[in-house]
Length: 389
Ligand SMILES: *Cc1c(COP(=O)(O)O)cnc(C)c1O
Image 1 (cartoon, protein in one colour):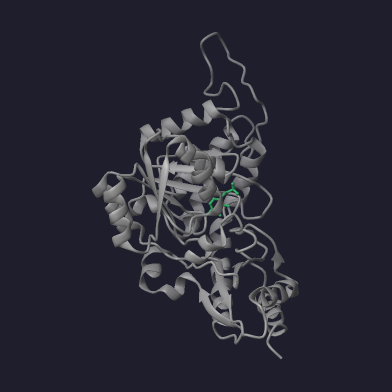
Image 2 (cartoon, helix red, strand yellow):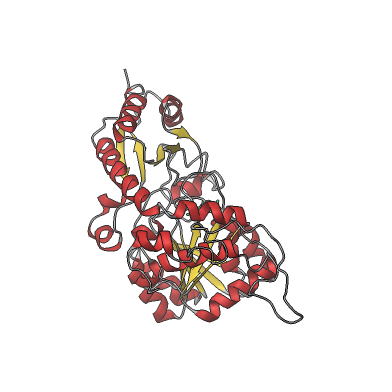
């Protein structure tokens, strides 16, 4: 069958042909950890579950297609996927990372890899000069960015960073979790490696953890498969099956997330308790050029007056939400609200947060696919109830 072109068609069909034995239309959930060999020295492509599993393989083929890579390797979580990429480094290698990195990746770089002799330099990836200086001065093996970033949703010019990396011989890693492959495919923009927490938009229902690395180089793909088998951070078959089930509706969901988020961002921009809205579409031409839609994440900063502390106002607002759940994570069909300073970014010191602009008054929304009027009603009552009297 020729490779189908459309995103949704690929999400639904690539790697997912009907089962040749039974005709099952949906890829079966293969739980077997071992595979019977017809004769000594022969096998049918599968030997042991840590390395290969047909259900996991179906997911990996679909993900590789959606990210326009030559192969995907899946893991037990997004952090295991990030760790697998860092395991390709040697002591003495350097990393350059954007300064508003996902907190867990920052912790991994600082607490696990730095003590092993792999040091990271952090730069504001929006500042091309700072990035160039860091590349020149530290000659990193890897450059690690996220776009849009967390929680301020800064859009980084992936093609530009990619060309700088090529110039200085660095490998570019893009964490594509916030955008999802529906909105952008970094491998086609000059990235070498895409990392995902499939726990978020790809799984899409807040009920399955997982991670993936997608690459366009065959040798790197083989290295990652070797590391996964050697280190063992494999994605379980049931998790693979659930993630694949979620993946089929990724395009449909992302459209609705984007539609709802656009209305939420517009509403927030006009609310008297809101100081600033952080939303990719409000950052100009690059978002339009790089992303199919601005995505489903919206962050904002509350206005505070001298009468009340930032914490007081934030707590008042957060405790009033009814439909948005106060919870970590993102990318599910249900809307979530979070407080980066005390939740996702609590591992950073107050100074580190201040440097990165993650003030105590910043609130992050993962806008779900509920009826948007219900979301706007909930937001309005939460914010209106906290207006100064
Ligand atoms: C959640 C997340 C991760 C980590 O993924 P887990 O599946 O939670 O291990 C990495 N990067 C980003 C951008 C994330 O949002």
